[in-house]
Amino acid sequence: MPDWPGHRVAACTVTAELYFDHAASAPRRDEVAEAMEPWQHGVVGNPSGSHRAARRARRAIEDARDEVASFVGADPGGVIFTAGGTESCHLAVVGVASHHRRHHESTTIVVSRIEHHAILDAAEMMARDFATVRVRYVEVDGDGVVDLDSLRDALEPDTAVVSVMAANNETGVRQPLDGVSSVTNAHIPGGTVLHTDAVAAAPWLHLPMVTATMDMISICAHKIGGPVNSGALILRNSVDVDAVMPGGGQERGRRGGTVDVAAAVGLAAAVRATARELTEVNDRVVDYQNKLISALCFLPGAAVTALGANRVPGTVHVTFEGLASDELLFLLDQEGVCASAAASCSSGAAESSHVLAAMGVSPERARGSLRISMGGETTEAEVDALIGILSTVVYRLRAEA
Image (cartoon, rainbow, N blue to C red):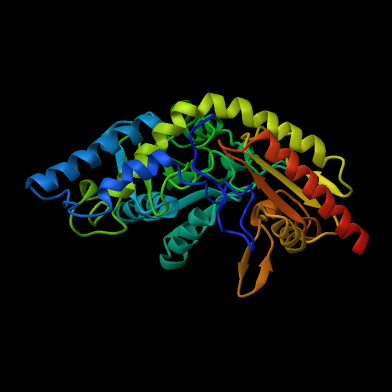
């Protein structure tokens, strides 16, 4: 069993005995905290300086860059450290589109309907702010898998960047990145820049192979047991990226600001541990996933999402007909279970998942969504306990309806 820290975190109403929200944030690994500790107090040199403290910091940054590059199968020079996955995705879309816009009369950004809002909002911002920029959307099938015919139809000769995630953060469904690359290269002479948000895929997939056809890859630390506000955009090939945050010339002029040594070191420790444990964790957690799915199929009104698709092991998404997510989560929380719904909250009003909407799931069905996500420290005993608690909660709500 990997050396994970205790995961009874105070993120729920009561102390969490059962943490099933890894897709939101994984527990901090002990080795990550230990690796970061020397860089979180006392003298931490500016990596851009020339004295010995600065040289120590720069050496730590470059060692971390090597680790992150190896994790995705790229050269260290392509690693741009960012303050998390959202900034990484934003830099990929806006940085590439901005450079393209300055050199072309028109610019098209192509994204799938199920992308994280870090991608969707960045693309829509560019289209809103610049009349020469437009966004084209790629549809998905009922399992949430990108439709390659729709991708082909969305491509334009002026396409600056195509962004399709490696695995969906809500459903865990994997996307056909090799197919995305093949279709794009076949329909745009000379190809275009391909980006993948690999944040949800990183805990489960061998990224050097899965993302081999992508030019840019986004990852973040806190989904793999690292610190929050730590991530990277990795360029596998030569890509022209305008700095969204200019100033200072750091990260080869692609992202201004002093690099956070502790954050970079923490990300490096997290990717190192993830790569080391990948096979063992996958083999174990996929058994838990199958066990959980089998149990859910017996609950009244339950429908496990995307059963026909290839998914990462750690995520099980389910909808309950006639029930509401907030009711389910409240009662689960009372029993010490942390999970989440595939919905966001804005101004106090629940907003249906854009992912489920793109898949054709009705708003009524989506209202009762639940995402259960596991990690390397999840045990079979915890899965058994969750099954018992969730069954009790569902039957209670049915009886009260």
